[in-house]
Length: 119
Image (tube, rainbow, N blue to C red):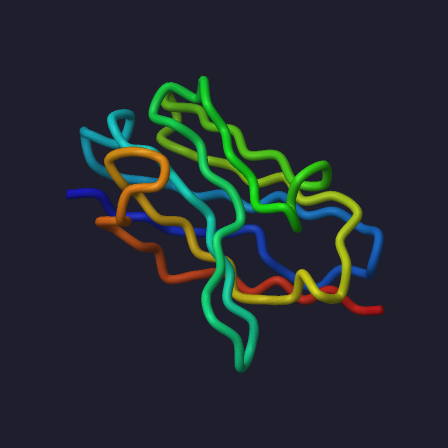
């Protein structure tokens, strides 16, 4: 069992930065790949970024590549999403999710954190 709690969301101006955190509880956290997804009002949830259990592999959506960086600290049971050069279209609720590998169905989800980017 893994419980995930996101934090770090907020209101930022376009061009600014935010760092989201996904804190996990559970002894098996380090064996899971962690992904970030987002859902904007009226839109489908979409993939943003993912990191393997070791941190050795990462994968980004085209919209995130070059602006967002996903990292993890297994000693702290935390995954981070550094978001730079934010755009208004990045406004969404951001969720982290745990799965057995990158691209596999998520087994656990957090409750989400709101990110709002003003123009």
